[in-house]
Length: 333
Image 1: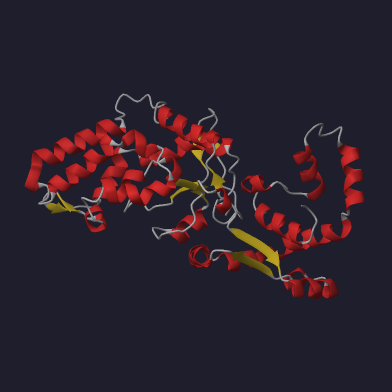
Image 2: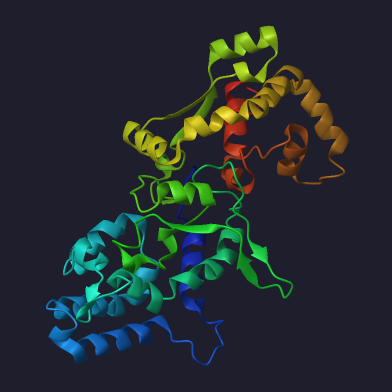
């Protein structure tokens, strides 16, 4: 819901991810993605036309992944489409999704075969430490549910969130373990999105596009609420300066409908806006500075009950909603 600007630090996370990728696998039978790709190339080449009449195109696709493997892992979102057009045009989406190969109709597609040899199913564990470093603990699409990292008794990450692809893995299997193509989401949003195209990518190289969405309260509904004190009367609005992005987002994630359920949370912000004046807040800061020495973010969270810095919206569910309404009501800057 709020993008992450690709700074040098974020890029360093991607580079570290690439360097450490699957290095923790100690199983003797574990086959690295590069070796798995080579084995698949050899298998298809050996069978030739018996595998598929287009076998050479399939081999070229695999070879393109192998030749560009290191670059693909840290490819930026702006490069995804051009990269596919320039280096992976030898197969169309139908061929990638086809299950007719090896002289028979199979249960898995060619894309599925690539996901398997590239160990897509293990990528979530590899990415967990980096999501933690970036402070991502909620679904990046709805910001209404947690997308936590869960560890077992030995301290090994075991899951807790679903991993969504910005560009679908069926049509872009070469990006299936690419750092900037993988986004933590809740099960609901991941199910709603499915393999459909989404206009929202978590990462951006354009600082002006970091915050494409905004929540607000309908002004008339605030007046109505003040009269009858019922949270159901507060009308939460969800907007974007990009109408195409907004329409796509609503079609995929039904955000306006989802946030109709959070009138109580909006009500609490209205309460605070009427109680917390600047003098009152200054007194709280002075009183509790000893508890939070040099930690203004923690003091603000204590006072307001939510993270107030825009960069922290991924840390706790509904932070985006609370911040936007609080700024609308001039509770925070």
